[in-house]
Length: 139
Image (cartoon, rainbow, N blue to C red; front, top):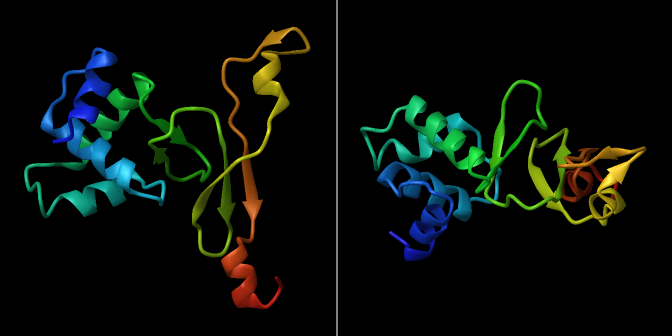
């Protein structure tokens, strides 16, 4: 296992179990913002003792520690992102791919809006991604 991941968990007071290290490694290597089901399906062949509950519980521990973030960009299912720092996401209505998008958000810098303290900003954009536009001939 990667020493960097072990240290990352230890810095947050999280015991570096094999489940946590494997799930974190999968997330870090993934560009798809996977769901619990997708992570479970990808890992169950290599780790037959993993259950969906193990994956879910591991993700909750990592999320609570601020190591990953949970995306609620789709109403029916949560997706997970290994980048916990604030950034926005784009969801393609056609291919259902989630993209990281870098948008300068003034609210994260201000820290307050109408006297309310901002602790987190989560913005989602919905539409048609560049690849799908090209396939439809509308780019």
